[in-house]
Image (tube, rainbow, N blue to C red; front, side, top):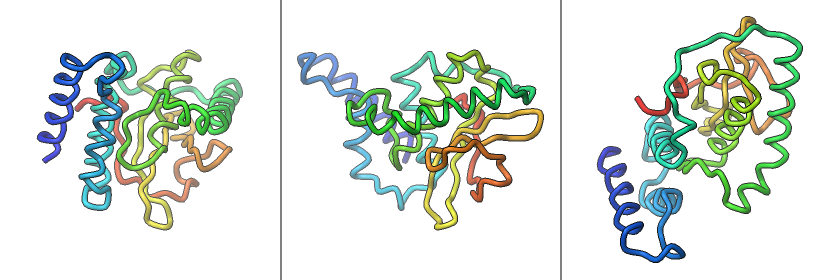
Length: 187
């Protein structure tokens, strides 16, 4: 089913891009959002939604999806400061970014993917290796799906979450980790 949806989105974007005027062209974001209305989140497993969202994100932001080996970062005060700064900064700025419809991840579930992918992008720009970061699909204590960014460090996995200002250890997050993908995005 997901392969058919992915193919339909790809075809829609390709056809629209070749036949429509630039102002009318359908972006991958708008194609995914229009299809998501026909694909209710509750009818799709959380990992399937995340996988589709990640694949569509890679079509639009290919440079963000380079495959890299898993890495573990030494936990230092500098790393702690960078992680906290990026987490707070993106959490504060994302509502305005979403209002301008910039850097959207094509999420079929919520804005959480946008937050996690923006944080990943900023951490890479700050010099952290992509291989140390993973996108995680989690279930909140209320049972709702949510996405967070996980950074592998020498003291354990750290979670950057748009619902919290503090960076926390994975075991202290209170989340049930439904899936944890090595932010390759493309299997």
